[in-house]
Each structure stands twice: as C-alpha cells, then as structure tokens.
View 1 (tube, rainbow, N blue to C red):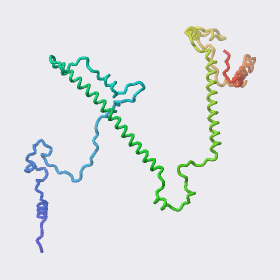
View 2 (view 1 turned 90 degrees about the vertical axis):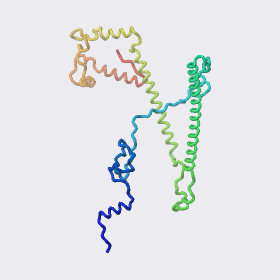
View 3 (view 1 turned 30 degrees about the vertical axis):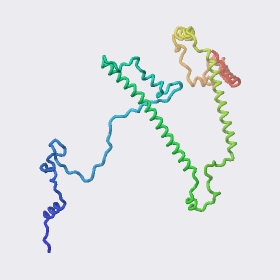
View 4 (view 1 turned 135 degrees about the horizontal axis):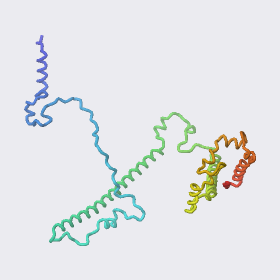
Length: 308
C-alpha cells in the first residue's frame, strides 16, 4: 500500500509542478519587481480576474460641428471657386517684390511668408476641388453599379432549378408578373373622376368670384384717406347724436338700452310674444326685406348692398 500524501504535501507538490516562481499577491520583496518605483500603480501586485471585464464605449464630451461646404452650389453668373479667375482675385500678387530686399530682413521675411500663404491657398483649393470631383465620380459609379445590379436581380428570369423543383402548377394559373390587374371599368371611373375634378375647380372659381364681388361691394366702407379716417374717429368718439334715445342724449351706446337677446330676436321673427305698437305697425317688413335681399343675391349671383 503506497504511503498516504497529506494535504499540505499535495499542495506543495502542485505548487512545484506548475513551475510557479512568482511571489504571492501583495508582495513587494520579489526580485522581478525590484525595478518598479513606489509611485507606480504596479508597485503592489493585485491579483486579476481570469474573466475580462465587459468593455464599455468611451463617452466623448461635446458635439462635432457640421463640416462646412468648401465648394457650395454654384449660382448663375457666379465664378467657380477653383477657377483661375477666383484664385487670382483671392490671392493677388503684390505690386512690389520685397522678397529679395537686403536692407530690411524683416520686410523680406514677411513678403516670403505672404507668398507662401498665397501658394498654399492656391494648391489647397485646387487639390480639394480635384478630390471633390473624384469622390463624386466614384460615388456616381457605385450608385450606377448598384442600380444595375438591383434591376438585374429584379427582372431576372426564374432559375432552372427553382422551376424544376416547384410544385406542378399550370402556367395559366400563375399570376402574371409585372403587369397590371385588368380593370374593365377603368374608362368609366376615369371619366367620373375627371368630372369631379372639373366640378371642384368650377366651385373654387365660383367661390373666388363671389369673394371678389363681396370685397368690391364692401369697399365703399374702407378707409382710404386721412380725411376719411379723421371723420370716422370724430363720429365714433365725439358725435353723441347716434346715442340719442327717448329719455334724451347719451354719451355711449348703453343709452339706447341693452342689446336684444336671442329669444327676443326669435320672437320678432316668429311674431310671437308681447309686441309693441311699433312692431305691430311694422309687421313683417324687416323679415321680408332680408328674405328678398337673399333671393336677389341668389338670382344675380352677387352680393347686394344692405341698407344703411
């Protein structure tokens, strides 16, 4: 019977077999960490998890602005931005060449810097314009290729393997592809819809004509001059004769009494309730007048002037 191995000996053998030569966690006396300074985060060895942490997306603060269009859409009569005329206008040459002045080195240096900026602007605009047209050309080619591929797949005939493995269906019972469903009443429906459209257009034209005629009839009360405006203001604020009642002159419209209620208007139209001597003498003249005016408007097709 072999000798029994104790737990401590088994742990020691496993430790030796694995070849683990590093010092245990939280130890700072190992020779492999002798070169790590104390201010380093790796100065104290912290045991790490075997399973890695889930990576989270890095949140960047702020919002990037929308890139400015260097070459906007060209308007009619506008010079193209990368044309020689535009480059000559934005980078004019100096009247005097100061790059080779020996008496003033600072002025010569500034002249050379100006020339460098002009050259960089010309080259930059030219290369950006070439890049724009190249990107547009490649994009157009890719779109055209995708469109051709889509049309090819859309109108491609049925494959032979699909046709041979399909269930037995008569060709006359299959739906016709890329054809409209027959509609025997199409002509009649189109005629009805055309007539409806014509009726709606005629009704809109009639409403517009009535609105213009009503505007013309009511234009007599419009204030068009300063003298007319002064007269309306004086009559509204200074003329108290319009507020004169049975009891005497008044200063506002309330001197004429309270306005008529809906019930009183209905009694006047229906000739019901208590009536005064004036109402009995007047009879149905006002109602008949309004009805005759409405009948005249329907017959003439226009707005009639109301009595003032």
